[in-house]
Image 1 (cartoon, helix red, strand yellow):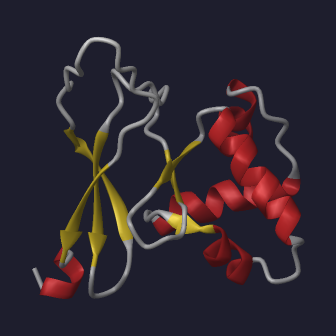
Image 2 (spheres, rainbow, N blue to C red):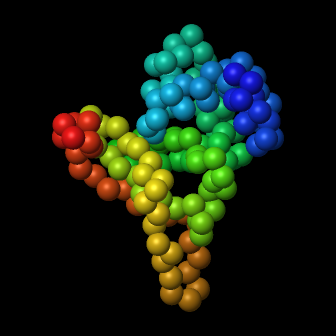
Length: 138
């Protein structure tokens, strides 16, 4: 738990009991999670508290939001030295059509895309859809 507290504090986040529990849960899951996934894991917690925790984590570079095409925002833990900058930290995401899980493929980086003059990117997201290694049996 001390390591989690240090991680949160290094990002300027006060390590409350709920923040520590949510962070620990997300790290253990190793997949991108929707707010409802976290709600189901913390049934006695207030939805607003859970949402605010995710937003605090996102604003401080602990998690990044993924639009995987399911219509529900998902959140995944950032890599250790990630700063979620458009020019440096873009990686693939994979959404399994069978188990409905979305994972970060952080070792597969998205190459820089040159936009036409006058265009300014604010966000980019590349999701590959198919069958994951667990569902394909490999």
